[in-house]
Length: 158
Image (cartoon, rainbow, N blue to C red):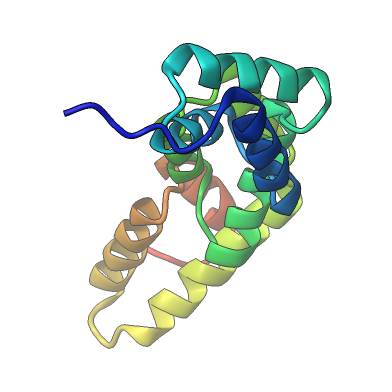
């Protein structure tokens, strides 16, 4: 069964402009949306090309905003942010630029803050508290090396 065509190319392009004007989008999101509206893959890609030319879509800008917002709002680490950007089919150079937009001082400060909160919320021994705190941060997408670097001056067993 073929999908019913809901929009012509020009209607799809206008829809995509409105869609991108509401919030920052990456190319794959726009292509997926346009194909769900009945445009062919080629028409969707042509729309995206035009949107890029007109400045509606900018993958680097998307990656930077995505990385900074997920870092501040969700307290995600760089590994998790990069994973989600790859899921959205964002290019590696744009992902790297997005991760560079995160302030390193804030990044390590957040690691220390989250580690400390988790550490003092656990009532087990020092080694167990440290391991559970590390595991928690690893799950939030922070690398082992970044965690160790951030807390090396603290008095934790690891």
